[in-house]
Image (cartoon, rainbow, N blue to C red):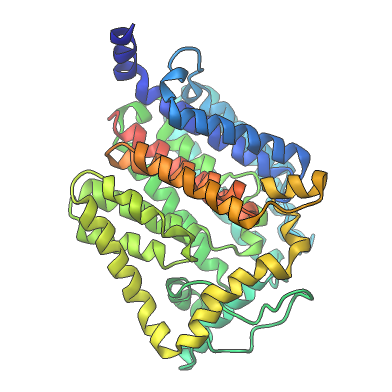
Length: 448
């Protein structure tokens, strides 16, 4: 029996892992799409199933060897569903329903028709189809920006203002001219780490809109997924080198995410650059630089990934240590510029969310929101910390050596971390989902 199971692992292990990960990505995306990432019983139920599913997968993934369908064979159907939902769920909160809005809907309708071609195996047509679907997805993102020029959300305004004040010689963490947009909590702070506004700087200077940088980052991540998958003969044979990047571009809520200016694509972009550098350059210094950029691109919640790096084959300890050195390298100039303002903006201000905007926290898509709605109390913070620490330690101890294992462990950790925490909205799960797609791509590369 053990011999049979060992042979099954060798022969079908990669297929089972990629199928489970792609199915988890599909469920996570469906889970937050219909509620825009806010709490609903349906969304909670779907993500709770994903939680149980991923815990079982991590502890005993071999139980999925027999009986779990090969989702890779149905990837073209997943794409068709995503493009259809992109059309049906199209729109942001602040979009003006003018020419750009209706043109976007028309283009998404066209995209739905062309995405159906992936149900058939016509290689010459599919190459042109791939390019057309890419161009439509990028065009619709640009039209979203034009149809929603000034969204009333702090992320948009602070990422637009911070690069400008930096060019004028003012510390973005000391600047107190960010607009106040909310009643319950001040939005007059820049709460992200320095790499974010450094990345936005040239785009805000040229286009006067930080979303230009985010669209470019999404295009870059799309190209990286395609680049990785093109090196997999299996992915090319089954058109996964086209379908998986398109699944990313046609996330059902991409129009809403684009409008709201969430920056979660930045750490994903840098993590994907880290992956490419590690695979194709086989040098620890450049990958460590990219990973350091990822750690310093949003908030501190990415730091636990650095410990998972230790178990990456070839220079794991150097990668972990080097990425932390680069992380501090990007932080220290702004810390020493004004230590008090830096600590307040990047640590104290984000932590104040949990106590000052409980009304919003209870709308987030988490276990705590479910408990609060049905049992009328919040999960004790110390209990959440103990549970998360236990999961983190378990994942670290059971993590196998290798880049694919590092990505799987990170994906599972972040999903558990966000779902069990007190605050998690659509952008958090968008980050997790993109990490899943990157993991699937690397798994398929191993089947090159």
